[in-house]
Length: 352
Image (tube, rainbow, N blue to C red; front, side, top):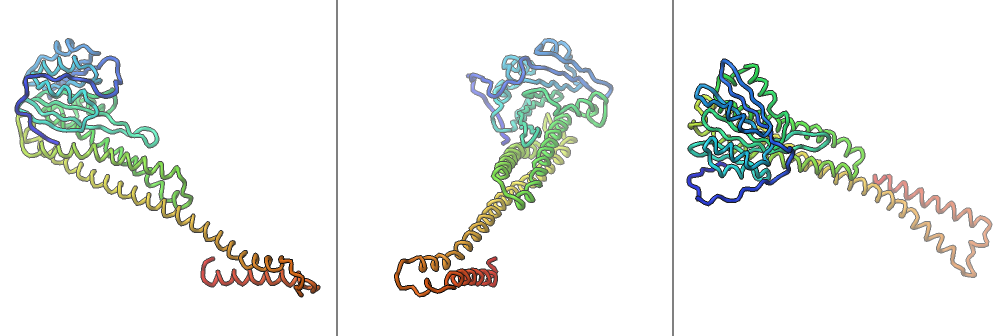
């Protein structure tokens, strides 16, 4: 949810890292670029090396990416260096909070969830935070990954508009890459969803409903990640600011359209998963009814036969049929005729 920060209380709250630590030492990467060229500096937990090579200038754009958000002091130093609101530090190091966007006079802050499909049904979630201040973009990732390697390649090779544009366009590219990951996750879930209908109709098994519920939960998580980013894009699209310029607004508008489409497709997949859940229980109930029908027919066949057996099993002295030479085969024949007659009756009623 987008919101403004106007004033802060002077008392600084205690900042705590919330989440899982994936790295021992944060890795920092600096890209200093303009249309003619690019400089790239990499450091393992050493901000001094980054600051020495920063050489801030309006003629360049700067992208500083940090892998690992558990080092609170390092993030504080980075925020202080650019004279940014210290309150965003808690937003960066709390990886369990809801994605959001915050705008103030000196920056735009984004916190989003990036999703990547893993083996099987698992989807890996990672919080990524962005701070945009004029021609400077800071990004914070929980761990090293290939979310933005394609964009780094475009920066190094000077492809597209990225080196000709400002840091706000780079922010758009990074958010677009995260949106592409959403599509990848959705396509993976849909492909697994498409495998289930025929399996359910052929032979509904308990593991299928477990798999279906897992897919449904992943779809809900995907929608929870998409909606806040969509709200943030809608907010930034309202008009240019000191940090997002008018020539970049159309790109954010296009990204918003993609997120709307992604939301619709995700909702459709959720409805499909719910429909498959109903299909599973329907087929399972149908199979149970078939079993019960067979058992009922067998029981019905034996009711008259049991009656005859009970009658002739009574120990009365005067039962003429007991002394008849053909009594036993006659009773067997009667039983067979009764069973055959009942089967024909069931078939005529289309119960068989």
